[in-house]
Length: 81
Image (cartoon, rainbow, N blue to C red):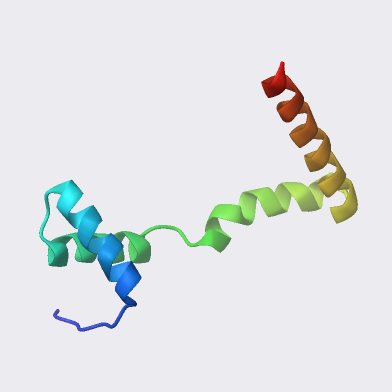
């Protein structure tokens, strides 16, 4: 099926560069990207297991954010050593 879409110039420029880097014609490359986006899982599907684990954990959002901050500080401290 043929289709015509409009995209911003900056996006088209990046798309053109990536198609060239992959050695594919622009239409084929764009088609592959659209196909992958439609056939792949949605963000909601990818996050569903994490959201379910969070709900089962009984943690509050505030507790989760606190844990995330602690881990971030730990990683930064390890990198600086």
